[in-house]
Image 1: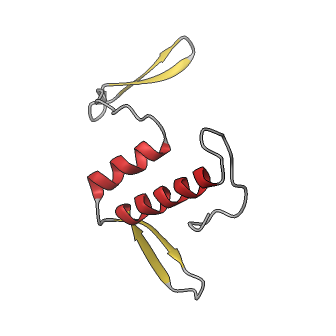
Image 2 (image 1 turned 30 degrees about the vertical axis):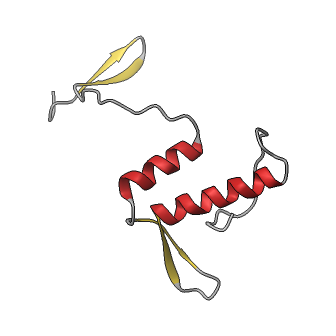
Length: 95
């Protein structure tokens, strides 16, 4: 046992023991996760990225939550409520 961690082989699989467990909250959907993060972390920076001028800028958890609310409102106004959809493109905040 090293630093409270023990690795055993059980049925051919390596199992880490000794770390313990912690409670995890139930998350209903992505909106719920974002809202919970905004409530918890508020004005802390959630994302940093380069803007169109190449300057590094940031979005707080509260700003991200507002952006998600705006996106949801726009999708509902397009008649997409309750539907599943995806956005395929570069990995960037603006999406």
